[in-house]
Amino acid sequence: MSQVKGLRRRHKNWSEVAPSSVQFMAEAPWGYWEGLQLAHYAHNLPEYELYSDAHCLSVHCSDPTRFHLKQGRQARNGHLFPDEISVIGAGSRYAAVDNRVENEDIGIKFQLGYLETFAEENGLGPFSGLSDSFGQTDARISEIAKLLLDDLRSGSPFGRSFGDSLVNVLAKHLIQTYGAAAPTGKNFEGPLSGSVLRRIEDYIDAHLSEDLSLRQIASVAGYSPYHLHRSFKESTGYRLHEYVTQVRLERARQLLVGTKMTVLEIALETGFSDQSHLSRQFRSHWQVTPSQIRAVPQDSPQ
Image (tube, rainbow, N blue to C red):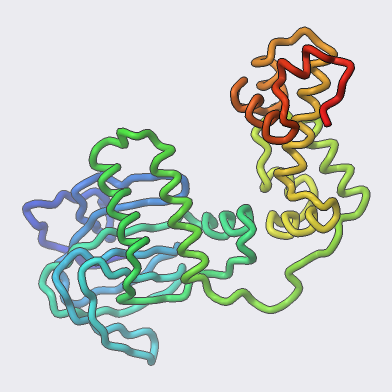
C-alpha cells in the first residue's frame, strides 16, 4: 500500500521483495493484474510515514491496534480491527504512530490513472480521487483482497481473467463508495455534431474486426471517454457498445448473404470472438441463427 520508511529488522517468516527505501516485507512477490499491484507485507515500526503517489488501500490482518495519525495541523486517533480497511488517495501524506510492535496487512495499489480511466469507460462519472478513510468495515474489499492474495500465492490456477474480474468489482466498489465528490462545472458536452458522428462511424466501419474500446473511439472523436459515453447516447439513442454490436451484426448478415465465407470467418471478420458468440448475438437480437439467414438469403432479419 503506502510507503513504510525506515524498516530495518526482518521477521523470520517474511522475505524482502522491494529493494528500496520502501521496504515491503511480503510472503508472495508483487502481483499485477489489470492495473493493480498487490503485496502481503509487515512492519515493526511504532512510528512511520504513510504516503503514496497513487490510490491505495490496505486490509488490516493483525490483532486490534490503536493508531494516531497526523496530517499537517490535523490529527486523529482511532482503532484498527482485523479485516478492517483503510483507503488513502494519491498524494495524501500522514505521520502514523501505533501501539503494536508488529503489523501485518494486505496492501493494494492502483497504477496511476487506472481508476480515472475505469470510471470513464464504465459510465461512473468523472472521478476526482478517493476520500481518505481509516478503520472501515467493508467485507467486500477485505474478501476480494484475500482472494487476490490466495490466487497470487497459488499461481493463478483459474487464469488471469479470474483476477481481472475481481479487480473490476473492486474498482467499481471503491469508486462508488470512497470516491471524492466530483468538482462542480460542465461535465456534459451535449449532442455530438454530424461531423463527429461520421468520424466515429467511419472509424468503427474500418476497424470492425478489432477490439473496439470506448477509450479508442473517444480519442478519435476528440472527447473524453466519459463525455463520449453520455453524448453518443443523447445523439443516437444507442449506447456506444450497442451501436457497435448493431453494426457488427448487420455486416455479418451481409457477408452471410453475399459471400461464401464460413460462419467462423465471418465472426472473426466482424469482431466476434468465435462462431458461438456470433450465433448467440443473432439469436438475441433477431431470434434467428446465421444458418437460417444463409438458407434464405433474400429475406432480411426482422
